[in-house]
Image (cartoon, rainbow, N blue to C red; front, side, top):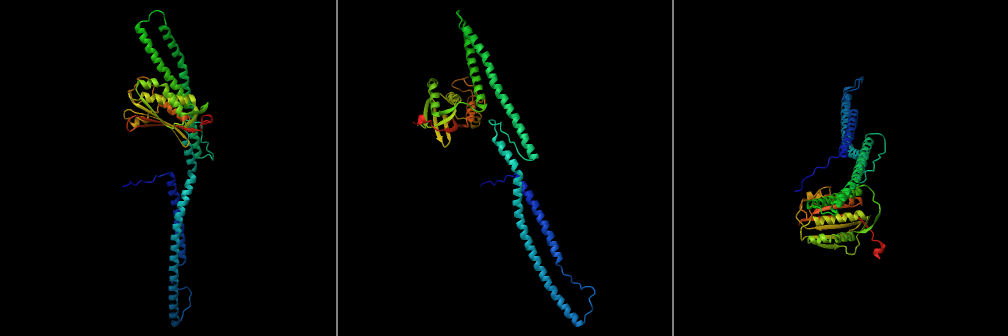
Length: 395
């Protein structure tokens, strides 16, 4: 048995009930006054007029009978008029009830129209288009004050986001100089002609490894800040299948080391193209392939699929592995979120890989969808706007 759901109590519904009740009460009052006046004006007085001259008995009896007959006729007419008036009033009240509800809904919709426009405009604004404003027009009333307040809030949010992104980019750039100095100092120590103590060499190698990790982390910060900063330049038509193929080929050694099998399915005619920044899209797909290799088990598999659906180009990368929790998977697109410490390459990840993928996809007008596979492993689907195949490729 389906559970009965109560309708949502919206502001428009409450306004409709309020205005309808007001109109209906006004109609009831008007009809009540009309009935009172109408019924009061049709009453028949049974008393004889003052100053009536005396009448003979025979004439008086006939007159009395005549008056009684006339009173009966008047009473019948009065009853008929009362019934007609009551029926007409009931019909008028029914019509006014319908009209009241319709008018109440129309007036409520007109009153709430500016609020609906503000709500729709606010929903369109996200972290990627904070430069947009409501710019509400109209008299200086409460609705315009609300819209202006939201515009001021958006301005403060835009300034805060821009300052955060500038800080990340500037800090990443500034940190490169001391890191390069530290790396050069270690290289100088290891390059001295005299023998280097084993403990010093081991420490230098460890420091170089950590510097590489920090360098990759800074590069991730720069990529994330660039993808989230705004409009992208240098857009060109790119094949998703070719980018994925190049990324897999560049990691052939890691794939062989972990004995992974790569399956390529989907559009083999290379018809899935999109437009975007080559550097960012290459980094996006590299991160997805790196994630597929790192979060896999030895002897596992990776499946690549490219499809074109309407105006959308999609790249899907699936991997085997242990069964994952969807709630944890949903958090992977956030910075510094990981599934766990079990990796085939321990310490090789910064927790920014999929968050960078999500940021690059959104910057290109696309989306990232992460799903835990029922049989174990992860499904990563990147959807981007579909672009036409270049003429030279089609030829």
